Image (cartoon, rainbow, N blue to C red; front, side):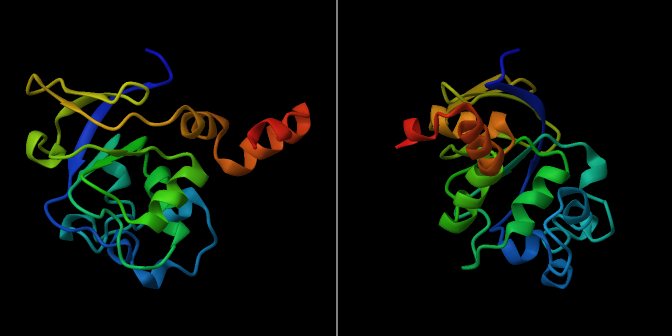
Length: 180
């Protein structure tokens, strides 16, 4: 499997998902640490995840959601780092909150825009997502969808481990000027 092809199990959000509910505000006091932030991912979204490590322990690879995933008007980095710490490799949704979309790029987590995806996937379905082409295949149900391909630049940031390692690598290689 190529670096752009992801495969794994999906968790599907049943409604609108606010950033404030992905990691409850009471847990924003910790530093930006994926393992620490993952402890309370989705605690405010679904009651079954309102226990330490409950979401992360399920082994999901993808989050599938509807409109304006992670909205709420605040750029809370705990959300993206927590999702990543919980083992999520990509989020597929109709649309995303702008601030969290940018946080996802900065940390190297693909946020993949795929209209109508929530209606094609159920929790536990196995998906294949090709970030480069936008091809999404629900292996469990035998259906396919088209997403917006993740730009090569965003894929490169993700494969570098986030924006900071990406920039550091370009500085070390003397190629920072090529990013303009």
